[in-house]
Image 1 (cartoon, rainbow, N blue to C red):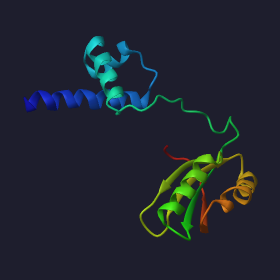
Image 2 (spheres, one colour):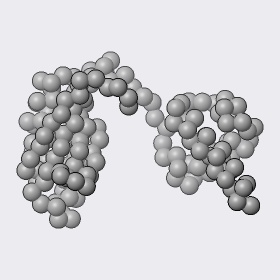
Image 3 (cartoon, rainbow, N blue to C red):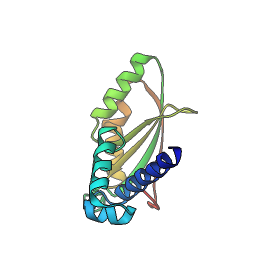
Length: 151
């Protein structure tokens, strides 16, 4: 029984890996890539979606063509880490369109933000108008990415 479960898990992992590379694969192409027929692959994909392994399908966009070629990572330290302060910061970060990603960090600071803008001047404006005014922020450090090597 365990052997079948291990084999089943291997197929699920192959499916997830292929969909991570290209979510636009047809079921026939996906089936061919993982070595199963179309019907079992479709059933597995639906189960993986239902069980929460696949949350969404997204398009990878060209940031440069969209005018968002400048990437900055911002370390944020809060003055207060009570539940209320964290919730206020989280809510404000979710609402800020300039913030592409926001991660709570265990370590020397509290949050790491990923911000994409057209250029450094646009980042400076976003920082001054939005990021610097997020609730409970006492310190930030900005790191400008010079090149995206892998995303």
